[in-house]
Image 1: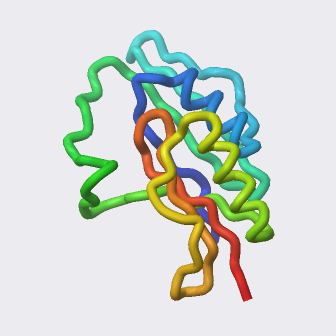
Image 2: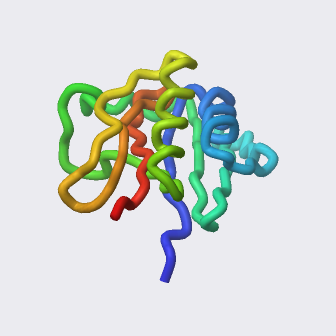
Length: 133
């Protein structure tokens, strides 16, 4: 069994699509629009086969969780894997240079990863990881 996709509601549909395509090598489909429901979405596909659905609809309320300072139960981050620690460092520097905050790392974790945490344009937590030996 595989994880087919995860989904994110957003008010910045085009901005998020461009972010995941530019910085994480995603490939976007054409925008799906359902005018009757006021719904728009993109599926972004990644090299592993997993997809991220970005969705927008005007009547979706704001998320009340504080995604930056305080974590809560439920989904908390998306993790993108790369092959080497050097790739983790490179992606961290690229996102930092583009003005995206680096919340932690790069660092080695106790469970065998080298990673850093950042935020996408909607303040969703993103990890970039590599297994180290």
